Image (cartoon, rainbow, N blue to C red; front, top):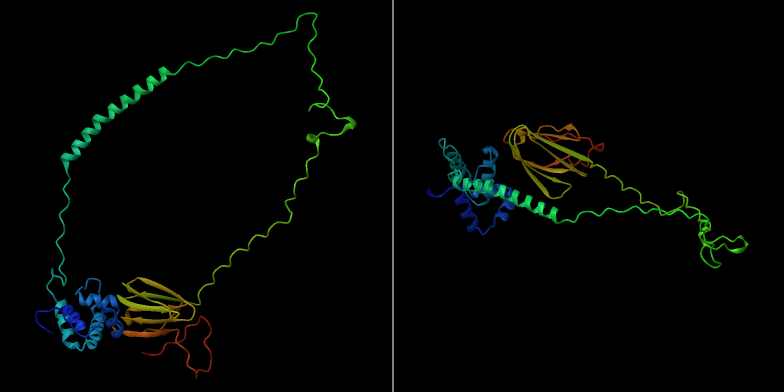
Amino acid sequence: MGGQMSIGQTLRERREERGLTPEQAAFQSRVPLRLLQALEADDYRLLPDAGYLIRFLQDYARLLKLDPDALQAEFRKAIRRPPGTSLVAVPPPAPPPMIPWKQVLWTAAAILVITPLVFIVLSLASKRAAERRPPPVAERPVEEQAPAEGQTPASPERPVAGSPGAEQPGGAASPAEAPAPPPKSPNAAGPALPAPAAERTPRRFQLTARAVEPTWMAVRADGGQERQVLLQKGQTARFAADTGFVVTVGNAGGIDLSLNGQHVPSLGASGQVVRDLAIPPVPRPEASGATPPGAVPALPGR
């Protein structure tokens, strides 16, 4: 490795010489793509634990036919920098924005002048509208005239035959007097309501991971898409599956696992990398008894 080139530049140039894309290199070296790109960019800010990062660096170096020990020594030398320096150049913080006090004062003065003017204009407009409105006209009560003496009050006219008010012969009821149809019973048969949708059944396996040290892990549930998480101390992640999980852990001693509420035995020592661990383990054909559903079988020793 040249003395003037950083670790990331050396890795990137060697990968390009071998004609590999970052995705191909990550797949062949089994190094997560995000960590591979961080190594090539010399960006270690989001990688708090250098223990398992060195293991990924060694795997990547072996793929590129580089000396893993030389890269490890260079990496340790780079992280032993004096206080106050960083591996990545950080731009200086931008100065705080200046408050345009002159503009603020002019705006406040304009508001103080315009507000009374608007109030005066609105008051004059409402006053003129009230003056132009015509006064309401009082309604005179209508007086009923009493009949003069000697005159009989007019009797109500009888309805003419054939008119709407005339009675029909034979006591036949008019259409208006026809009996109304009886109301429909609320218990009458109607369209059946759809049955409520069945509640979703819970998954068979529930895996809980609690970090006792900073660690990285990748979990594949039911053979689906892999989910990667970076946990700090005290953080917890949960996963669900019907058939099981395949787990890769960057710091075996920094993770505490439980399956369906039952503690899973330790995966290994601190800093140890565990790859493609099946949880629950696949039972061997020569096993005498079957594992009951939801139980946590013993993991093989690592």
